[in-house]
Image (tube, rainbow, N blue to C red; front, side):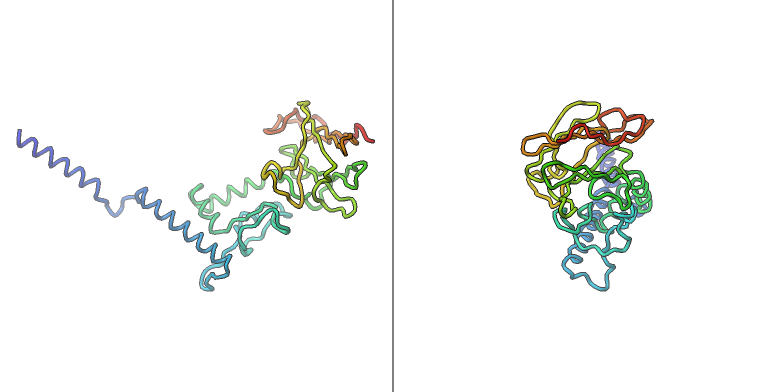
Length: 275
């Protein structure tokens, strides 16, 4: 019995020893991989802080905006190699519509984690950007879908467009100052109500920014609706205009997020009521 107990203790010791001993060709442990990842993130953060403060050593590679943004449509594209100046704010003038652009260092680390290699990640992002709708901000240059809808009783008008949004059948618009022809904030006297095509529910329409950051006043407000929606303009408590928005022809199935069945043929803007 004593001999058997001795063998059991010896076997346990061997098993414990074998678990603690790593061979040179063993894969890295989870803890060592986590430490390496944390160290790389710290280095990315250090370089970003140095770039923002202007203390990046001239011996180091520059911190640039990620080249994934060069895959965007031409009017939004940021050339590869553009210096990274730090995070931006959508409330500041001249900021890219995407807001805070990430650095090449940061994006490459994310892509490597998500796709295994930076190259595979870049191809995936390029494919995604080539097949996405560009919603909000400004109409693409030369967009022939841009239309104007005058709003009675106030010196403002609606400018809407449909370009680069066919997949979701989205329509975006700004309220424009008629004296400057510049987009901005809607008149405080103006309220808008929307009735979604195929649903019939009427609701107060607010700018997209209201849902993202309630209480923050942006210099330009973006509005988002869909094909065939019925939009009412109310000024000083009185309805002054109602329009049915255009519809794009579609022979496919309804898309995710689109409330109604797609139109079988294209339909133009209709003015249903005007004062």
